Length: 250
Image (tube, rainbow, N blue to C red; front, side, top):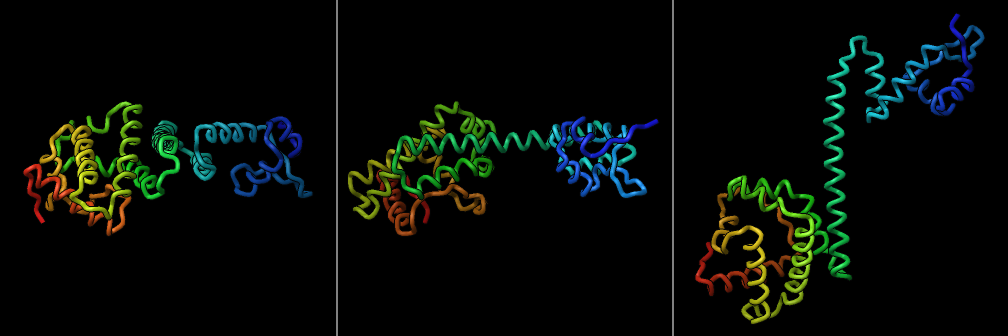
């Protein structure tokens, strides 16, 4: 004869709280039987159902998914597990990306404290939009080259972010000064030198990235400059490029 268990006894035997069992009953994922007198009780087969719930929760399935699986007569276990594995890998990739952004944030703050908030947000957004940047660069360079640009050791990446944060800070500090001045032009030169080192091409090829035939909606590189600062920067860059013998289209 199948034994009956009160909710308290069932909770002790399974290690699941009474509150959780009440909730499972409420959402109809593990419903106890009800006697004629209205008393709820569990049977031996409820242990099997609960074990399924515990196992699937451990594998990352939501209670809604678990409910559907338990109620499905012909449950395709392999298909469900493959789907769940894919979801977990995507979640892990997202978490890894967030950790990378946090490492970069800490790195920038430690090197430049205090740090201009617009510069900080710009660099972190650049990391978060990495996939968009790769897609945009694929319009200019072969895919292998783009992969190589982004496939660098984390230590080198962090060092580049430090240098970029410092350079952006210095540029913001000189914005509004004479754009043809020695200090402004030295910083513009540093900027193009840094671009060349990252991309592995000279300045003239880098300028191909700004041609008007590229998809404008993909130009997602965030810069921490106001409209006035952008206008000043454009003049300073144009003057620098003209000195280098490179004419840019208006």
